[in-house]
Image (cartoon, rainbow, N blue to C red; front, side, top):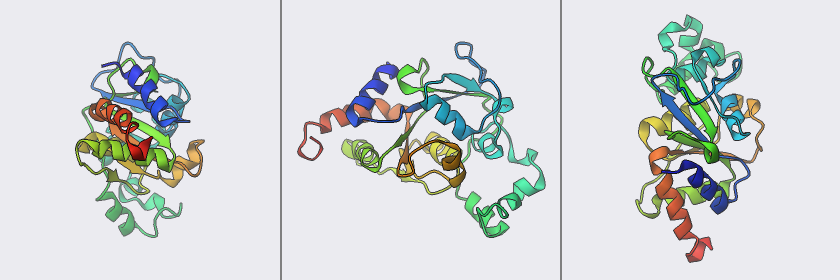
Length: 226
């Protein structure tokens, strides 16, 4: 399957302003992708790929504790107690108290640690690898059309994500559930990423991309989507 071609077609059908990002988890460090230089947050890595960069990262290149934990690069038990409890989030204003943090975490998705050592990122239309997840920043209308295209031949509903970290909601969730996922991103990610305040986020499991792109094309011949 030619993912670069699918990326170009997706851009054409939806008239996207932001390049979709291909994400792939690997047991071993890939040999055909360069390693990221320096450290950055998971959400910043997404932005780098949106802007055309192709690279892979390991735990050494992950600057954010949440990015490392949710993406499966580090076990929560390896963090200090104030991180494990979520206490550090309270003075930042993300939660009122520790119980609220812990209740929230019960409903957050993360990839099991100890499996993967590297994560590759690339603009979808330049990806030379088979992505596990395609991450997109788009407007509400474009997001709506992706959800319609997902349901077009399957009747499936997308999974809504709220304001949990994007490394969980827009990466780990579609990876672990195999569901198209939409959300708004968290306050930290939206602060770190240079994106339009009105945009939303949508992630597509790699296995669904070809079907969704095909459905979008067919839908363009129908009354509501012409």
